[in-house]
Length: 96
Length: 96
Image (cartoon, rainbow over all chains, first blue to last red; front, side, top):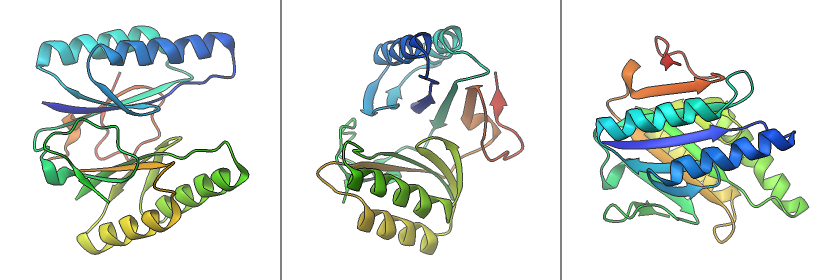
């Protein structure tokens, strides 16, 4: 299954900057960074639940936000990229 | 159709900061901001192509990145939100 993970971490404190690094590090174990705060992941159910659990343990729920979008029907036509593209080249998304 | 728009704009110059504002303004006309650089949009094909065209006219392709994910099968179970949730409450995504 294909997942897009996006996050906003409040970095106005040192502790927040540390959380931001830890969120990115957690995601790096499960997928590819495609923008500063966006990762693309191809995961089975076990790894998906693992990632949700890890991220939940890092963020501050009252300050930070993580959104994990799951899409079953991700194909070449599901993604349009304008400008720089660091993404998983699942037979190359349409780049404009 | 449901779209997730994510973007990274190089803001190390005044001009880049202006582009960031213009990208956000463009997206605001088509959907809801759910994180600093993430919008959720429900669009028909015409409005979708309009948005792609507008964003393409704002960004610098060599510096900025916009990713527009399209998902046909977006349902209540397609999204997990950890922490703060500003999203479209399409009968309320699963919030943890």
